[in-house]
Length: 525
Image (cartoon, rainbow, N blue to C red; front, side, top):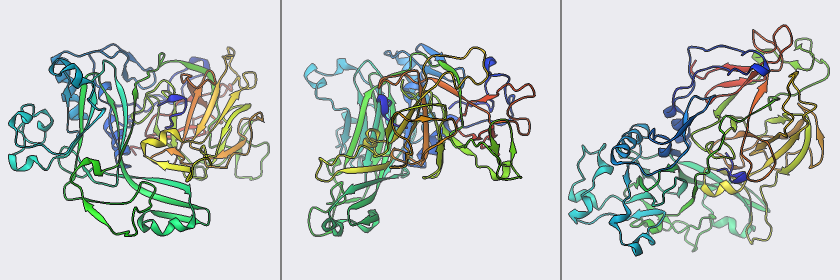
């Protein structure tokens, strides 16, 4: 889920997709299915990330179909007609039940000088009794029977709105700190946490609230802070009304680094304006992938599986390359976001990425034979600052610019996978969010497939500890991602290699649990 390389559901059928070059499928279509769009969004909503990819709901613009997921993705942003916009509005309100609403922007209703003053985030501190303010009550259509709230209620609504007055789609990450927010039905939206570890003198520790403290030593402070993050694909010329501020809240005088402005650590004041609430955001044009079906023929090794040369346990079975633990003793890992995922996998640089949930400190092994070309396991520590952050984790928008990673350039001659027509084009595979100071290799080192190289972590924009795996045809910062499949480790219970030795492959889909042989279960059992 990183923002490296400027990276910024529909029912899926449980299957391993066909690839004639890699042999037959492991399994044919099963009755169970993976996450729906609502299930995928709900997974992240429970972690404090509320998704509204509204621009992906429109069927009125040019689309391409993804051959893996079967999902269509918007590839051309245009101004919609009133009827088309109405369809998108209804789809948005049905798909994102917490969303207040969307509103079509008409520049002809504004003076040119006013257009320049429209902010990317609109903060309404509450409306007065001017009836003209309520002529367009679309944002209350679902939750109030199509009627605006009463005069008595109007002053209570403090609304946060995204504004996109451009003719292109924006992707927006917005984080609101320390307060409770309400959705369309008035319920409090689930919040999450952000953890910041930073250098700080011991004298500052007394100013930190106990609820935010995770751990300290003589050189550092680690603070845990409540926040709520919105991830929105905002269509052209659209206002997206995200949430209300929950009533009757107060705010402390604490700085964002957890240090009080004054000596009174219990000082709190009522919230009467959005200016008292800390909000951060990252808003950029949506950079789409130009070839969503681009696939490299090289099969990569499952990242959680070690390759060994000899047997040390008589209870293990083996094929010609690898020892394999019995199924009941072997760990499986849930894919929590696949290609074209709802949270962050819809940019050109991470469209084909795959995320696996795993505990911090899980050992990770090289996906290919190759050479290490990049290592960053210090989270961009910058001692030039007076109070430098050296590790962040969680859902804050600014985490998109802090991450740990390792990248390996594959050796095409060593990763042929017994395929007659090996793709000799370069392949770069990257692991992201890895644990700080866990890398066992350096730039320039040659690594073997299945060799231990680092441990998993949760550094950067990471709602839950996981491994983010992505692949590219080159190592440039602006490279587009490419799909890669995983090779099966061997044969077990009908999974893996067949009798003639041809390699099966699999591609993980969100919601499924996988090990080195492929699909273990769909998550629906």
